[in-house]
Each structure stands twice: as structure tokens, then as C-alpha cells.
Length: 480
Image (tube, rainbow, N blue to C red; front, side):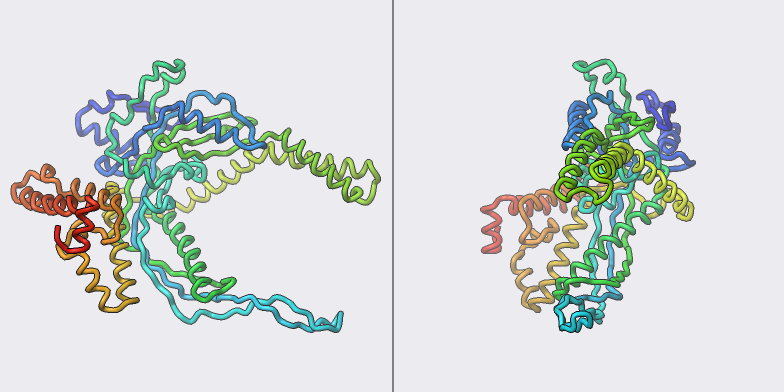
């Protein structure tokens, strides 16, 4: 293990040390501080995409568009595992204050014209009811719950590679994930690249604070849309939402990333490509000459149509009406990437300063290993409960009877899905439960016997519900 540009480079030899040394090595890998998430809790998404596929995505990202400056060759990318905290929780939200506005036309007397004129106005009304709701936020459904757990790269750029679907392939972080294909058909510069790991240096409490900010923003948007719909309103204002988080779970996960670096006017611009599903993010550069040409043509057309700027004659219209706007827009196009970097650097410093106020602990009770199937089942269970609750409120007691009659032998309940679930939902539920209750996972005879019975029950339910004919018969007659 050795350092290169702030990263920790690993070789397979590192993992052949005794277990005690492995544990210390991994925890140091996980953070620049003395600590980090424990080895047992860390998961990683593997590299599955060929580096050439990432090259194509990189070139398309910087080459598409008339104003884009095509990057012909950036060299082989770095292959880095980037740290993330993925967070799930249940949120209870309540609208404590809001006004809804309805647009209307009013006759208003205008003293200047001495006439009544029609004007648009908004009539505002306070919302008297305090609406409240609860729902789950899961990382598979909300990429905003994936929090980049480092300050090495700019957060806004790295966030673009987040994906809910790739979490389903998360696995234990083993040394095999650091092995890469030999790439014998590629140039030596590609074959010499080694995979690296970016350490965790963002505490889970800070990640939860970022997630809470995302949740608040999402709930405010939801409240705004909900009030507009309920009150048939045209506008809302003074909307205040209170949220409460419970059952918080925070898990450390490494994302695979191809990191491309190009030098632009003395600064390094980086582009990130997800090594699993090729999501891409980074700062684009622009062809300032094309921007200048379009600006010059546009302003020349505007000057000819309007007759110039009104003073200075042809010379004034040329220099002030055409040349000056052209120079300004081309300079803005040239230096926009650097201005964007400056703003992102300032924002990063603000994040680092604010993080000092958060709890500096790694292994809280709510920090654990990520389990995709557990999150899926949690979401489906909550969704089924929510649908049942809504039906019970809308239709009365008879809906409960209908729900029970549609599942006389409890097959849907066994798999944790609703009777209206799709075949894909049933298959996904079975895979998760089968892995959870497989007898081979248990060594204790009592637990093994209990798991065997549960596994047989799950298999019986799945054998009926996976077959469209058997499922139709079961739904109609209640017999399998």
C-alpha cells in the first residue's frame, strides 16, 4: 500500500497479511482520520463496464452539441472506488403553514385614463388544515440519499454518477474488486493503470444532514404540488413543512468510477463515469470561436433590423453593437469552466466548515452494511400498508374483507406483496426472502429447522404466484 496524489493504492499483497493487520489496513483505507466505517459494513459496486465504453461516453459527453469543445484524447482514466453513504429512513411530514392563491380578473379604476381597467390579481387564503403524511425514503428510489463521503472531488460533479439501480449489485468489498482485466488488446498506458480507493472522510452524521436537506426540499415540492391540486390553486406561498425522521439507516458503499482529467487554462477539469452503468458527470468546455461566430451573426442581424444602436453611426453600431457583445460572450464561454470551479471550491469550503459541528463518530447503532433486498422489501411492505390504509379510509370496512378474501392461503402475505403486484415484483420478493431464509445460512439445528420451514413456505407461495395460470386460478377460486 502506498500513496499517490492523496489516494491509497492497494496491491493484492496487502490483503495477505494476518487478519489483525487487514482490519487496521482497511479502517485506515476508509478514512483520513483515525477510524472509518468497519470492514464488515463496507460494500462496493463492481466495475462491469469496459474502459473503452467509458472512453466513448467521455467523448460523447464533451463532443455533443454545437458549442461543445470536443476533447480528442485525455489519456487513460484513473479507476477509483469513490466513497458514498447511502441513507434510508421513514419521514413524517406536516404542513404547518401555507397560503394558496387563485388568479382572478378585477376591474380597477385607473386615474390616468379615468377608466375601469381589467387587471389580473391573486387572492390569497391561509390553509387552515394541517395536512400530514408519512413515507419511506430509500436509496434505490432517491439518488439524493446517496451522499458523497469525501471532499477530494467537487460534490456536484460526482453526484451525477449516482444510480439507484446499481445498488442492487452491491457486494462485500473484497480484494478481488481491485483486480482489473489485462486489456492485452490495448496500449501499454491502459494496461499500467491500477485501481485505487478514495478514503471516507465524511462522518455519517454529516451525511444524514445532507440527506435531511434533500428530504426537506423534496417534501416542500410535494406539499406545493399537493396544495395546488387540493385547492385548485394557481400559486402557493409561505409554505412551511416540518419533518421528522425515524428508523434511519446509513451504509457505506464504494462507487466504481472512471476519472478523466484534462488540463484547461492551467486548471484540471475532471469527468466522472460510473464504472457500472456509465452515468457521467463533469464540467464541460465550450468552443469559444463558435460562440463568437454565432454572437456576431446574431448581433449583426439585430443591428440591421433595428437600424443600429441609435448613436455613433455605423462605427458605433459595429463596435458597441457587434464587437463588444461578441467579445464578452466568447470570453464568458472560455472562462465559464474556471468560474464554475471557483464557485464549487467555495461551496466545498463551506461544507467542510459546517461539518465541524456534526458528531465525529463512525460506528453508531444506525450505521450498518447495505442490504438491497431488505430495502426493497421494506419499501414494498410500506407501499402495501399505505395502499390498504387508503382503501380502508375510502371504502370502509368492506375493503378489509375484500383484501383478505383475495389471499385465502396467505401466499401474497408470505412474499410481502399485494395481490396487484407484477410478476417482476413477485420474483424480486422471492429472491430476497430466499436469500434471507435459506437453510444453508444457519449452523444451529433449531435455527436451521425454522429456516427450512420458512423457506418451504416461501417456495410454495412462489410456485403458485409465479405461474400466470396457477395465479389466476388462485385469485379466482382461492385454491392452488
